[in-house]
Amino acid sequence: MRYELETLSPVHIGNGDQYTIMDSVLSNNYFYPINMNKFYEKLQDIGKIQDYLSYTAENRLLSDYLLSIHMKHEEISKYKIKLTEQNKNDMQFLKKVNISQFIKNGLGEVYIPGSEIKGAIRTAIIYNLLKNPQNYDYLQSQRRNIQYLGSNIEAHLLRSKNDAKYDILKYLEITDSSSQPPSTLEIVHVISYWTRGKHSYAEVLPSKIKLSGTINIVKREIALASLGLSNKEDILSEETILKSIYTHTNDLIEHEISFYKSQHAEQFIKEMQEIKEKNKEKNPVLRLGQGQGFLSTTINLIIKNNDPELYDMIRRNTKRRSYPNIFPKTRRFVMENNKPSYTLGWIKLMVEE
Image 1: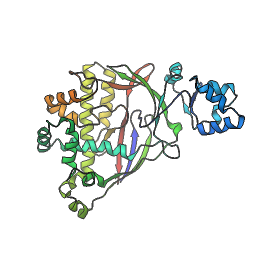
Image 2: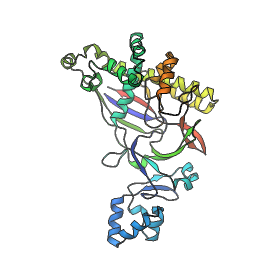
Image 3: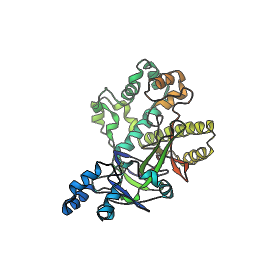
Image 4: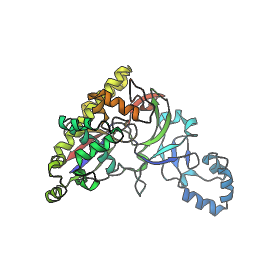
């Protein structure tokens, strides 16, 4: 099957690295990540290596150094990203902070890893299986093992033995998405709201970007039987997978709408309602990357809805700052016009035969 993704809100899939003031340059209209290998080669050519090393000890802007030696940043950049109006408003901050990088392939192009998509689908499938009362009874039987609750449930629902090679979803293969040039990216100002008020910056795929790839469901009956997985074969149907995503997302959005109503956040209620309208059983919406939050990436939403006592045990077992009445409380938003304006990570999944 071929899949197509369309971003419904800005999406950040990080590679774990950040750009700093010493390996990037901001101009009036663009952000330039610098190819440091090319930069060092040019420094070597003009005999400035030691001079530059002395400069870096002072932790000053790379752009100022380039200006002092009359080297053009355009000649040594990896790519450039056009600055938004919010970026320009934030210019004094952007010159001082790190910017989280979007994941890129070997050609330096941006894409969404198949593993990221599969991880979101995996959570949705487990969540949907827990709608079955018998499966949920097993979850409750594991409540004393609070530290290992999630892994125990995952093993029980998807495996015949607690070993990755006995996992039914090893037969669900999802390729990395197609790629886009890095100039497609935008830099966004992200604020953690209602709790810490923490600010950060990240490269994102903006809304309305389309990517594609393939999903293969490999059903080998003999292999499934040999691994004791024949009774879990229905999990691998296209219908089950898409319905699971739809159900998980629908419940998650309902929870978010309820939260935003409690905070009188009309703007985000409207955004969630618009995303909910796009969530269809055959073409569901899922959430990826930064901003997903605690309930998107775990099975704990169904526990919160069905078993407040067990959910409170999970809350107290977390190492995060915890708000007993509203947990989790932190939400991350993209700033626009100097105010929180969009949520992160929503993607429409369309599957074709």
